[in-house]
Image: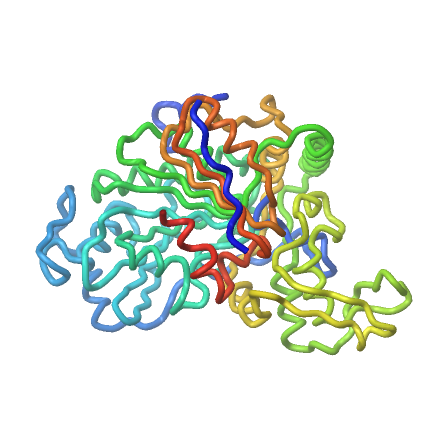
Length: 455
């Protein structure tokens, strides 16, 4: 099947961040799954070993503002100097370096005014200079490594790098946080301000056209940030499997979801770990072992660990939890059939193997999702602009919105609102047969999804 595209036809805002400030429904919490936690230890930030000759490229050098020169990789404007300039701009030396054939990845942990560091990953080509910047924004509870750099040799970051982008992954603070660090203030506006801090730090140094590319909650963050970004260098907003405002019964259901998160905040529940990493980890370590979860056809029996992981990934919409209903089916395309006994249940993932899920979830930090972020996302889904408003009418950059058939589905209203406000450069496409995370993690992503993100 070919992607289903809504052909663009010709043709409300939060104020810009106040003077003096620096201005992603996540990859939805997989569920209220067995093993889900409301507290988590601080996560290890993504980074890499592999310090080699490229490490010398990020040693402090004289850094001057301005666009990189074209003197080549080894010259004054080469990729090494780009990384050095980024370190100066962020006020943070690299905390991790990794390299491969033709690329280098530097990881930074700048505080930029916050109580817990952000994680900023820069992936640069070592053979040529970038023509533009792609700011990559992961879904809620995820990070750059899990969402955009898995596996390390074939991923969306490399796809963009090969097409002339300097890749800058911006992972929210909660990835490096403890539950006790997160407060009721860590909503979508706080994430927007953090992203703007990074962009405002780098833009005067790099002076390159840029785009925001976000998945799930990161997609909402990309749209919200673009609405307050009037820079002529912002060229495009790329949204991968996220949700704008619903209407009718779905909007009413989203309002109930918003109310549940508001109640959690009132009760002091500021963050939760949806438990996806632990779920997948048990499925890999002890696939035939019994899980804590009862099987629907016979609640006296329990899923095996492997069966539960497959069920949660392919039938996310059937799981308990306030926001899992937002999926048409689930995180991954696949099949599941109950057998007479737990050992006879049959499951298969269509595009993304369990090993890829394990690699991605093993790269997570805390895995925590702020309740305030979920409240704001649910308000967007409900069209509740009193709680949170994305200024659809102020998004003037090109918008490329790509959803998955089995993830967020054929829900184009957000794109329609942008277009109706006078922006004709908006497309909305649905990838058939794919779940929420398949366009990131699947071996089929390169032919099926990535070309749609780089028109």
